[in-house]
Every structure is written in structure tokens, then in C-alpha cells.
Image 1 (spheres, protein in one colour):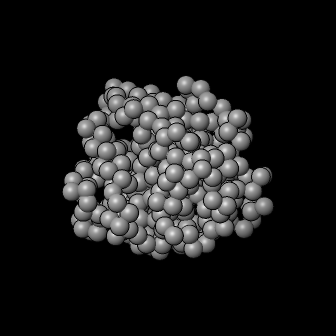
Image 2: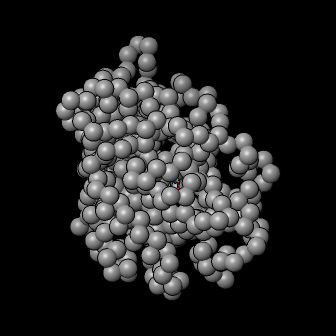
Length: 345
Ligand code: OGA
Ligand code: NI
């Protein structure tokens, strides 16, 4: 039996039973909203000078109302993005034996190819294979990455350097939008961490029965997602699932759990999911920008007063991250485990 989904199901006409969600937990694709303006699109041109305060205002509103936005004129060259997408596709099209050199089901390994979410703990599988890479500091991890395709390490490293720059700029803007010093979040993350997933969603004969990824919130600080031209990402807004239409060379940014903590719930880490389709395979590449494991997370003292008591206790990111992988993708957030007792339901 094949280890990876892509090898198990090529040519399948039915979804294997361990991928079928119970009836109350299916995508209901006919109830999903799709329109051109699903989540705010923000033009970052001028962020460092003439348009800074205007852009920061837009970012603040998007964080409050959606927890998600897309960015254009982000300063990352199109060639860097195109190379990242094409080398990712090439990787997932390598022969199974070649890909499996990177396989591991241990979530704590810093470079690994795996499938679904956490095969050791989950009951129902998800329609996805993924390559997970730690990527900051690059020198510590690059030598572990796949060496095939031959340009993989260089193309991915160039992409990582660029996305890290963007993430740091976004964190400055988000800090300022909360009325904090620009460097507040960047300082709160300790030595910083950066992980990436390259998600590969094969075509699926019965997309109404399963998920690429079920609804979840991301455990890190901020996620910067690149996707190819195939739709699949959906975001929960006002109780409805909204499809995000791909726009070439834009990034999708979302607030993740640690900003919810640092902002003491002013900004929420929003549920999102990936659905699959019968016609086209899909690649998405989230960069999970993180604190270092030893960084202590807690609500920013500047956002706490008599009317806004701290909603979370202090914890290390290591503590949080371990809970996230153990619990599985779950619509009840891992954040609940770190709420201050006086305010938990
Ligand atoms: C994720 C994720 C969405 C997508 O990997 O955490 O939310 O569109 N991916 O693949
Ligand atoms: Ni996610």
C-alpha cells in the first residue's frame, strides 16, 4: 500500500473510506460564497513612505473584520514566486521512491514529507500530501532539504529570504495598527522562527466527501500563503465560508493564534480550510512565521487595563506548538488551553 496520497489514489474513482467525513462534517460546497472581493486586497506600494498611515489603517481594519487579507505590490519579484511554484510542482511529480527519501510521520522533525495532517493521531484523513521545511535561520536547515529537483534548495531559499522580509514588514504594520511600537511583535518573537509547508492536493473523485484540510486556525504568529491558480482556500467570515479566488503573484496573509494572544483578542485567528476538486491538482505554500520555541507569549501590557484584563496566561511557544500537533486540526482552538481561568467558559 502506498504511503502518500498521490500514489494511493492516482486514477481512483472513489474516495477511500478513511477519507470520508461523517455527514455533519462535510464541505457543503453549494453553500460557499464566492465573489471577486472575498477578503480585502491591500496595495503595499508606499508602505515605507507616503502611504504608510493609510495602509496601516487598511491592515488594521482587515485584521479586525476578517483576520485575512491579500497583498499586492509587496516587493517580491514575480520570478521568485514563479520559481517557487514550479520547483514545488516538480518535486511532487518526482517518482515516489525519490519523494519518499524525505518521508517522516514525526511532527517534530524539521524537514519532512508527510500526508494528511498527523497520521499518528487523527481518525479521518485529509486529501493532502505535504513537505514541511523549517527555514530560519536558513543555514541551519537548508542541508536537510531535498536535493532533487537540483535547483530546489536555491529556489526555495531565495523564496524564504524574501517572504521573511515581507513577514517582518507586516508585523511592524500590524503592531502599529494596534497602537504598539513598530518593533513590538518582532521583539516578542525572540530569535524568530520560520516554517513552510508545500501542500499538494491531488485531484479528488468525490470532493464533497472530504477536505484537503478541515477548518483550523494556524498556531503561529502570521501566515503568508502563496497559491497556484487553482481555487481551494475558504475563510470563515460572519459564520459563512467564503472562497478566496486566486490572483496571480499576490500573497494571502492571515492572523494566527499568537497575534490573537499578543493583541489580547483585538485580532482573531480565523478558521480557514482547503477543499479539493475533481479537475485540477493544487499547490499551496504557506509560510508560518513563528516565535522561537523559547519565546514567552502573553498579551501586550500596553493593551491591558481595568476594562481589558489579560485573556491568556504566559506560556512558551514550545508548549503551545506541542499541543497543536497532539490535538489535531480541530475547530476548538488550542488557544482555549491557555486562557486565564477567570475568563474561560
Ligand atoms: C495550512 C492552510 C490552506 C490552503 O496549510 O495551514 O491553511 O489553501 N492551507 O492550502
Ligand atoms: Ni492554515
